[in-house]
Length: 477
Image (tube, rainbow, N blue to C red; front, side, top):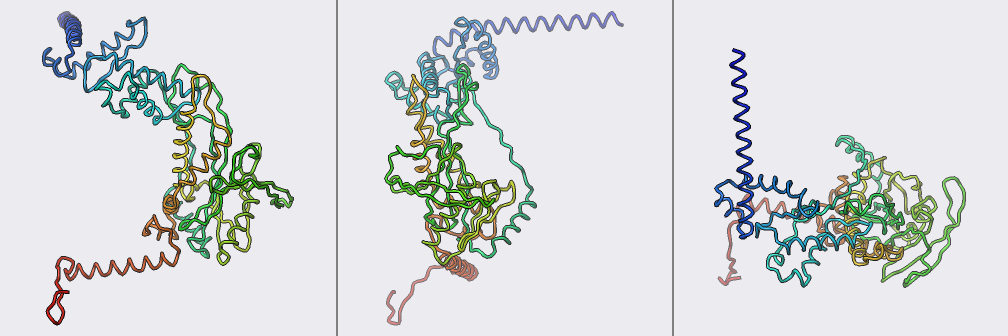
């Protein structure tokens, strides 16, 4: 019995060897036929019908041949094989088109790196060149994500990512924190709660999600940490007109501004120490802002206390009969402040992504718009001979320009995303109109009356019947 089993096993092995040899011979024959059909310019379906094989097998043979050809073709250089909808053959103009895209992108990106949108912009610029714009296939080419992904794989472009360490809370924990905050600001109206937070805007650092080439040694370089810190103030239902504060590295003595006035303020710190703070009231293209200076361009305790005095003075001048609450996080520089018309209200620790309006929505929209504007500006400045970079003046003006484009509807959306009961009425408002609190109450009352009337009409079925009215003389009204 054992001898017969050995004979059966040996026979099965011989059959397997014969099958593999047969498939190898078939694959070599099909490869030769495929090359002939490629030269003739046949499409995929035509090659499948002529060779009498399914499309799946054709794709598997293509993968096998591409791996084999990559090792031997052009002294080890990577061969470019593209799956295009309009042709099956490798078009040399298409190969040149993609190589020019990668070369121009590498010349522009330098050690910065650019996101996917800038690679798409490069494709559009290369498409408009005289060499490629007359080709009918390249003229109608759409630069989808699959197209850009294929270019990245074939030409050695890679992505960089940054991990975030955010603490997660359950819904029950967040609701309990919301109830505690509602008790804290029970004496304030919804329109009198201001939110304030700082955001660092780097104008020379590389993007966190950027496309870079593997041979350009980006990851070994250290990016510049020069930044401008923006400190804005927002309210849910109106623009209070508080000019934002900027904290930079210099005093902007050489900047081209409409107004540049120095001001000195005495500030008392939490330890009881008194410090003289110097700041500049500036104006650029009709937009007012306040400028501070320190070595790290960040908000310290003396900057925070000086800002609290400035905001309290501004609100007292323009809104003398109102009491305001300032929502802020537990950052070390944020010290308690209380005056006749302004009081700080602190959020629980590590809850800013959930409970702070600026972090919920506003800064996300601002950072996206700022990164897009910064990339477009640096992409235009980038050359082949030097690294593209912005000055502090250009970076600060870009920050102010992007912040001025943030509308009140984005701010209201941020207040709504916190899911506080006090800001729930904002969901029923027209986000394009700045209304006062009395107008909002009237709007809600009218909307409730309208909904009641609509329900009555539906019950009586009057909404489906049309009437013609006549007066006593039987005339149509």
